[in-house]
Image (cartoon, rainbow over all chains, first blue to last red; front, side):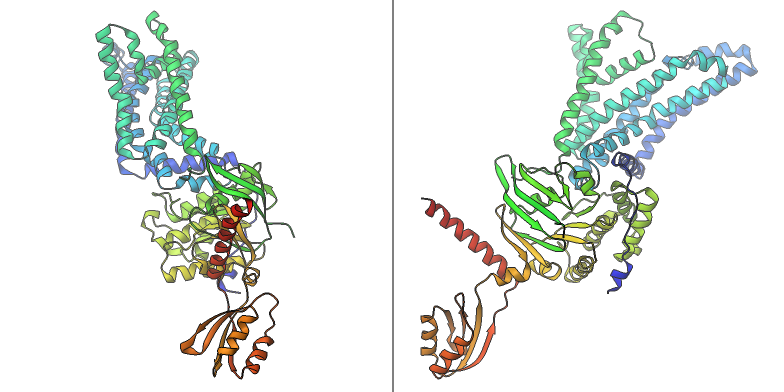
Length: 293
Length: 318
C-alpha cells in the first residue's frame, strides 16, 4: 500500500439538509466582496451618512437633557432628524445611493464570475439544487443591501429610543420598526433579483455598471424630461428607485397625499413586474449546462 | 454485486442535436474510462450521471439512485471534478475545499478539518492559504480533486483530470487516481482524451462515438475482441510459406527488408499451423509474437468498425 493510501482517511458523518447550504453560499459571496478594498471605501461612504445621523441624534439628546433652552434651536437647525418614520425613510433612501454604487461593482464578483469562470459548475455539482444556489446568491446581495440600509436604520431607531424616552418611544413607534423592516425587505428583494438577473447576463463589471447606471440614472433623467415635456406625473413611474421609495413610504405609513396614493398601485405593479422579469431572466442562466452547438 | 451505473435506453437532445442516442449500460463498481472524441457525448453523460440534466428519454440510476428524482441525494455520494474553471477567484485553497464540503452537507467545522486533511493528502499543505488565482495549472487540478474528495464520495466523476498538466504533474495525478481507484468502496469514472491515462488507471472502459456506446467492457475483454495478430520472423525463402498462409485465409503484410511479416489470422486459427506450413516449405521460424493491442488501437478499431457498420446499415436497409 502506498503512502497516499495510508494517509487518505474516510469520512463518515451526518450530512445536513441541503437548504442549509444557502448560508455558505451567501457567506462566501459577502466574503468575496469584502475582500476588495474598493468596497470598503464605498462602505465607508455609507458609514459617513450613518455617523452623521448617529451624531445628530446623540447631540439632540444631550442638548435636550442638559440645556433645554437650546433644544428648540437645535431642533430647528437639525430638523431632518426627528425620530419619525420620515427620518428613517429618508436615511435609508440616502443610503441607497451608495448601495447602488456598491451593487453595481459587486454584481460581477457575486454572480458574473460564477457564470464566466465556471463557478456555477462548482456549486451545482454539489449536494444542492439550482434553487439553493439562487437563494444563496440572493441572500448575499440582500445582506449587502441590508448592511448599508436596514441595519444602520435599525441601529439609529434603537439609539433614538434609548436616548429619548425609551418606553414610550418604542411603544408608540412600533410602526417605524415595521416600516424599516418592510422598506428594507422591498429594497433587498428588488435589488437582489435585478442585480442577479443583470449580472448573470452581463457578467463583466463594465457593462454591468453601465446598465445599472442606465436604469438608475439615465432612465430617471429621461423620465424627468418626459414629465416636464408632457406635464404628466405618471412618467415618474419609470424611476424604479422612486417607485421603491414610494412603497417604502407606504411601509412607514407616510402616504398622505392623493397624488402619492394614486401612484402607489402602479408603482407596486412596476416593482413587481421588475422582480418577475428578473426571475424569468435568472432561470435560463442557472441551468446546469449550456446548449452544445 | 449492485451495479454502479445503470442506463436504460438513455437518449438526450439539446434542441435538435442528439447528444446521446439509445445508450444502454450496466457497469459494476471499479475504475471506468470514458473515451470518445469531442462531441461524442462524454460531458452529457457525466451531467446525466451527476443528476444535473434529465435525459430526454430513458432511465438512469447511479449507486442505486434514480438521476431524475434523487439528484441531490446522489450528488452527496458522488464527487465531480470538471475539466477546467470552476474556481472561485478571491478565495484561498482551504476556503474553497471547505466550501465544497459544506455544499455537500458537511457541518462547517468538519468541512474545514476535512479540507485540511484532503489538501495534505494531495501534498498541498504549503499552498492551502494561497489565493486560487495564484495557483498553477497543476495545483488547480489538484485543488479541484481535493474539492471532489472532501466529502469522501463513493463515486468520482473526473473530466480530463490531467488536462494542461506537464509530464511530472500528470504522472503524479495518475498515481493519485490509481491509489484512489484501488481503495475499497471507491469507484471512478474517468473521462479523457489521453488513452494512456485511462489505460493506467482504469480496468474497464466505455467507448462513445456520436452519442452511441460503440464499445464497453473490461480493457482485457476489449482487447480480446480484435482479430488475432502475430509478428512473424523467419530465415530462408518464405515465398511459398507465405502463399500457403494466404491460402488458409491469413492476411499477411510482408516487410521484405527484415524477413518479417504481420499476420492477421482468421477465427479459429491454431498457432501450430504456422509451424506446420513453415516446416512443409523449409522455412525456419525464428519468431512468433502475438501483437499486444493498446487502448488506442482498441479505440480506433472500435470506432472504425462502428462507422463501417453504420455505412453498411443504410445500404442493407435499401
